[in-house]
Every structure is written in structure tokens, then in C-alpha cells.
Amino acid sequence: MSYRGFKKNRYGSVMFNRAFLSLKDSIRDPNLKVEEDDLTVTIKDKFPKAKHHYLIMPKDDINNIQQLRADQHLHLVKHLHQRAQELIDRIQGKNDDQGKLEFRIGYHAIPSMTPLHVHVISQDFNSDCLKTKKHWNSFTTSFFLLSTNIIQELERKKSISLNKELYQSFLASPLQCHKCKYSPKHMPDLKQHLKSQHA
Image (cartoon, rainbow, N blue to C red; front, side):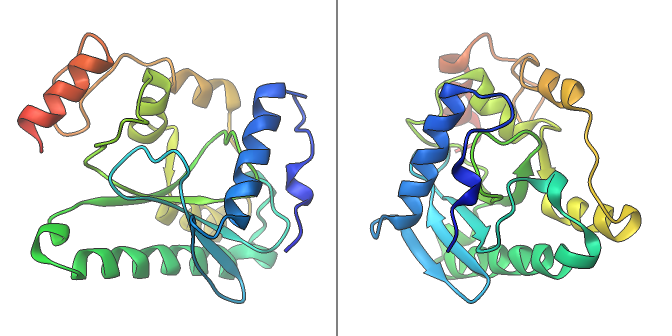
């Protein structure tokens, strides 16, 4: 597997570069690696934002969704989605309680890590690693791009074009419960609400 994607990004961000190294290390960590096939690798997120949080990435050198081209990558993006759904089916099939869990499959519009990876995340958001508004908004606002929508966009337009300023603004949105209209004052308030109302 090539790790070309772990070079300095276009912003030269030191923080992002540390994140790149973290993901690279995670791929190689046998405690995080879940499975792989000819095209993809699946790992547990090192800092999960929910009870179940996985990353599935291609073995091809692709940094983000804006590098995707339908003629080259549509089959791969569909395969990533298929692998994600198979993972969800296995988790939900283990017992009745797991079957009640909701999941979403999607990409961050502006990822902080390379290579390209799709998130498979349960909607309980029960995790000590979920600490900031940015964490929350990156999974519960339009910043989180559903895998099915990315597939449809590639089929229609052959590539993915994003307004980065618009998507960046979603991270600064006021906190909002993803299951109801409750607007928490801060993250501890949100987490208490999730525990008392939606656990």
C-alpha cells in the first residue's frame, strides 16, 4: 500500500500533518486493523466519536473526494460503500441490541486526514472522544457527505466540486441534536441530552 497521501497538504498545516501520521500509523496498527480486501482496508477509528466508528479506505493513492473521477473511481466508491454496509450488517446481526443501532456512511467535505476514507459511524455518539462542537458538527451537519450522495454526484457530474468556505462554515454552526430540535448550550449539555433522551 502506498502512503503518498501523507505528505504535507496544500495548506502546509502542522496540525493536519500530525493527523496524517496518525492515520498512517492506524493503518499499520494490528489492534486497529479490522480487515482488508484487494481494494480496501478497514480500521477502527483511533479516536472514535461513537460506540462504533470505522474508517474504510482504498489502497489506491487518492487523498480526497475532489480527486475522484467517475471513469476511474466510480466502481471503487461503490465498493467502499458496499464494504461499509457489509460491516454494518455484521454489527447489527450480532445481537438484538446492536440491531437497534443506526449508522451513517459518509465522507467529511474537508478531511483532516489522508488517504481518502469513508466513515462508518453509529448514531449514538456515545464516546469520550467526542469533545468539541467541531467534532459534533463534522458528523451531524451537511459537512458530512453521505456516501450514496457522492456516488450519485459522480454518476451525474463525473467529479465532485465543493465550495470549501461553505462547508467550513458548517463546522461553526450552533449545536443541534441530530434526533430532535433541542439546541444544547454546550457539549456537556448535548451529551447529557443524548444520554437522557436518546440512549
